[in-house]
Length: 474
Image (tube, rainbow, N blue to C red):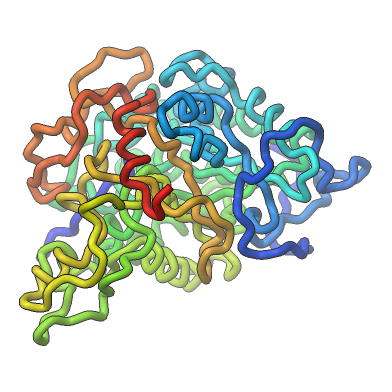
């Protein structure tokens, strides 16, 4: 769902500062262990006013994380799925009806309160507990792809605020959930589109030009940050694309500057931003183990290879760490953290390299070294050959708050053929395995699996492939 875009080569009443008192917790904790228990969370005193609590630096450290029972049941019903059915994944609010629960999205019936009540039950005996939710319903959503278009038209910013964000904020601010650490992923596939997919780029779409002109992506993200950031136990992480999208020079700083604009529009401030998340619902590896951007072959930098294509990054971790530094230099708080979605970034199986490629040419070296098995970094939909990536883990590297599975493995990115639906989701040819591409993937084959359902619906064949190609192996 996050898109790769190659550059052309040419209401609580009191706002809290996110910094302040820190809770000392152990680092490197695995997430999700022991979450399926019953009771209430005792991380804070029942007599303590939630509005006086300060956010911790890294919400994942020392914490258990919510296991979505609906996703867990789907996973456990698959052959071999019980091996990962207890892993924590994100809860997706991708339309207004999902707030209350509507039975769409592949059989989802639980609403936001249902999930939060279950999270409180799972948190029994935990010193700290994280609940992950994806906020994803901007007007004119995902202007570069049809598979994840939404229910709101390009001009319906007022509906977004009053019918989507306001009800979510009201629920999250309920004192019943004050002891949870609520991590929000804010509007994937939005702001980076305003840099890479607008005129005069050859990757431009008319829909992205409209959203840049009307300003509703910026206004909507700012409003979400403002309203949700005012809740003391909410941790906002803005979606920041991935290395194969904004890792190029003409995208990198421009994207960071746009994020700063969104974080300081309306009532939003940088204190409403706890960090950023990269690779949400995408397939790029967290780390490429067998080559780096500093390598050269016979005097030729890997940046000149066809695959890297002058990018400055070859994996999501290097990109996330560098992008964090850039964001801080532009005025974001120095203690922001980064999340990396590793739910489908494993690329294991028989085709995975076991070492560096031949040094006969820079292209042969990169092709033989890279674990990313996609045809092109611009391919984002239901990728064939992908596997589960690193398991959810707290503080895996400097500046990285956690590896997370924000995208629930086994949920489709989009249908491989047109399927009528009442969820506002269209058909994108990038989900069609016969599609020969467009400028946004340099006119390569899509690399998508066949027979896929509508985005968000359960895709058994994909889940089985993710299990088979998991790396680290199951």
